[in-house]
Length: 128
Length: 156
Image 1 (cartoon, helix red, strand yellow):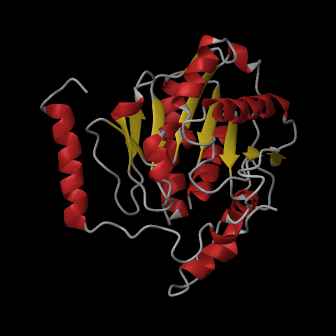
Image 2 (tube, chains in turn red, brown):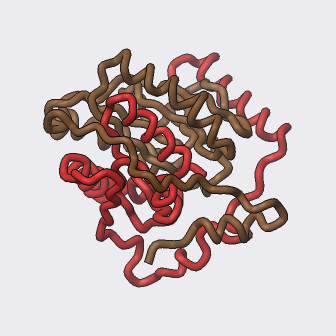
């Protein structure tokens, strides 16, 4: 859904006269919504600009996206990046976004409590 | 091979009427970049549900967005989203919101200027109409009022 929302916004912003580039890890959804420029990275959802605590990996991906931003000249182009999540283990491709893949949603009471705690952390100490 | 997420979504939510994804067959709108990114003011937006300090969380079908100061530290950011596993993004928001990387590219001159603030929302919005008619026009206004010349969007 995120991919569709991002593509829709990109189209509106581009139509308003500002060039856009969308990252994507869901090729089919992005192809359907058809944003002006996109860069595809074959990583599991939630890592569209790279692996956690791996700034070299993130840099390479974001830099490739910036390069593609300047290079794409045909509307609707999706540039595919060569990076592989784990060359020795492609099992995530079988399980990503299948039943049981998403953690259960927290109950409202638990969510409210977590939010209160987070807000208190920043309002009482006010130092971060 | 890219994972086919449209059939996976259908399977994951097979108790519900299949979702009607937006299909735009006509060519997308097009605005050429007028100059290299090294001379552009670039804005960053993520749909990964990232929040700054005590900002309120997102709700179901929530088309609101948050302004994230461009110098926000990692420990000032949190993540609120149910459409993807957020464990890694909570540990390192740069997985879906590469603010630190974009600051580096600004410092190194790869982009001219990083727009302050950056923008986040929770992309799991089923209503495409809501995204197009409520959220997108506000983002256009935010970008225009700040003279943004290039817009980088990251889904999650």
